[in-house]
Length: 350
Image 1 (cartoon, rainbow, N blue to C red):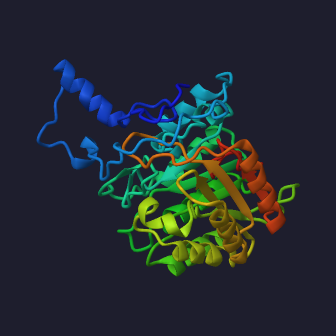
Image 2: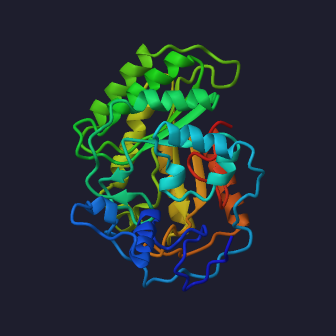
């Protein structure tokens, strides 16, 4: 992986500074084999809704932040299952630095409801725009891919779909039903939006699906857990306006509180670090999560996905990540992952 300098115009994960579709358009134009035609949609042109390219990262990326080098054991089969079933993954859309490792292990995080988000978070590489119509066949295709990949645990996330009356909750519910029809004992983790303006409706939809879906207990510590319900708090309250436009800290806490009240559901959240937060602020967020009965937490280093996104204000030391892990465990979190390359769905099956 290339080292990122404070003036780098490249992604910290080695990705191109433009998104893949932008790059494709640029290459076609430069070779004369294609151009932006009048019928090309705004989404296809990928015009950034923000530009932080004039803000350099705080320093060079430290050597301990690197992608794991693994043998390509299951990468091809994982890619085939994903692409043959015409599915979207957060691994690709969000430029996740762990994609090679996870796909080689034969796992992926499926992103429901398309590849276009109705919000524009300053840290996220998923494109913003007007989403396509909801594909009602998506849950069955997800279940088919999971079956092909022989997974016994799956993470489902989605873009924000604020234009939908239920925020997309029904697709999460249908996906759960399809997965459990094929494998009643499969472990499922949702990583949902905050369901702005429809939180209680979304809770009701998922709760009904949990009751209707077949379920058989497995011989492990999660015998009584039907679903892990994640929603990422992402950052500290003071940074919300810049980092999570369209979101509210209190709304995210309320989402987690409501989800945690559902029988046989354990809640989970994640914090990305290095955006300018203080240690005291991080500790307070962890306390707020515990006060709302969140049982699982992931803490990872923010890595700038493209030059347009927010800069890295700090690369945290390994010692600080270890300190945060100790803090989280002392606060009573039952599941803690803390480290530079940790992401919310990273080793979620552990």
